[in-house]
Image (cartoon, rainbow, N blue to C red; front, side, top):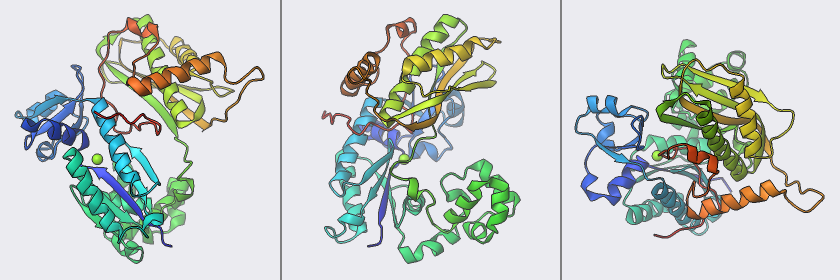
Length: 405
Ligand SMILES: [Mg+2]
């Protein structure tokens, strides 16, 4: 049976959720931001996008562009909760649903097509259910693989439904600009343009040996993707994240090393929690510092062993910090883990997980049930509570307790 994949992506997700739950925002240009002074725009409604309001803009930039823009503080719990409930809806159509970010899902319909007239019928039903339950729209792409499904979904935005049959894939890809391929950003787009390639057709016909010389293994991937073949399919289910990181921008620059350490502890625990969720361990860690003049500096280290938890990550990044002479106070701190491998449960001779590991699992459970940061290390109380908005790449854990409101 031919594989059928459906990609579902909410339109202007955070902003749509806000407009749906606060009727006075409907039809207005809305930008979702964090609560700090230095927050940037994390999402904007279509009314705002029309005026060039983009994710990543500062409030000041945005107001200059569109004085009537309405700012709304983001509510993480609401977005995570809606995501989990959309996931539930999709699970009614197929057990094979992958949450790929807080507002994007892949649903493999191959096995469930005997139960439904056609993939498009499923898409229409899903769109209707999401619309009725949450008052938001989404775009859907249907194709023989995830790559083409995603491209099709993006093409139909907003509120679209684009289905590509197996035999039409090449034709569908031909006329698209290379930037429609996920992973080809502005930089790669420019590099391809330098080779005279702007359309997928040109990329497809370009000698792969030249692409390989220029881009390494990515040259092969590019050539496949231009034909609508998903080169990552084999890695799909167990695909390991390349790196896992968190960063914070501060309202006031921090010059005090004690305070920086307290933040690093918080960031290290956040990274450790993500690693546990993904069931991976890492041995590479990096510390990123950004100064008020925006110069950014990253120092990395690879340990000879895989770090067992947040404490070790914290010790590693503070050692990196200690090796640096700060030239100024910092406005942003980041901690990332890389060089990851699957975590194989490693019970010690003396009975199961060690104490620290058990403690952090319990903390994870509490935070899963009562919300992120319900429990956190006391040292982080040194810092004023920070307000943050979830990153769009955030993925709720599969076993997130389904909370009803
Ligand atoms: Mg979206």
